[in-house]
View 1 (cartoon, rainbow, N blue to C red):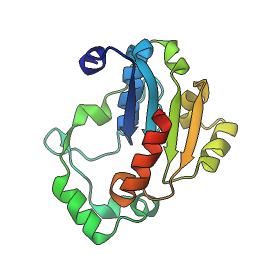
View 2 (view 1 turned 120 degrees about the horizontal axis):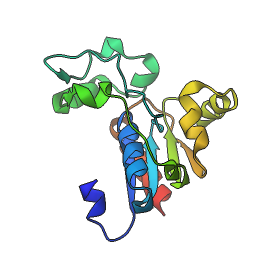
View 3 (view 1 turned 135 degrees about the vertical axis):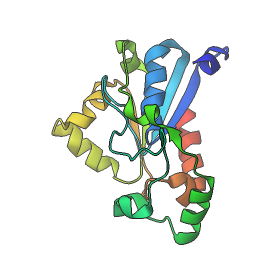
View 4 (view 1 turned 30 degrees about the vertical axis):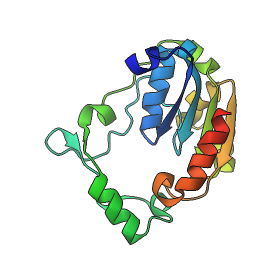
Length: 174
């Protein structure tokens, strides 16, 4: 939040995967300082939930799991070369990032405009889950201004479709 506070103007946050929950937490703490949150294959997480308490921990950290632990939808377009490059650069995250529940306090977070870049699942699936009141979509449903962008690929568009992802993010902030 110190970084956000260091800017004179409101900022745009981009969060991928579990980083979406972190961006949402920052929007909760500084709703007047955030111009937009862009969720890349992610969405806002509700108060009291962990990002992912199913990830295996090793020595207090969570390393990138083996590929066989991911769903096929996660791995679309992530060929062997991209997987090797990704694994070589992957850095374990502190376990608390994924395991500790998010704490949200300020309902003004719902006034922060968001863009959801849907990769692994199309935005039409998100709309169906929203209409069905799926529990994991309730925080998203509370947001007042949502744009959706479809970028069909797996969970890591920064590797599989980097140009298209950059274009989608740039379009979201205009």
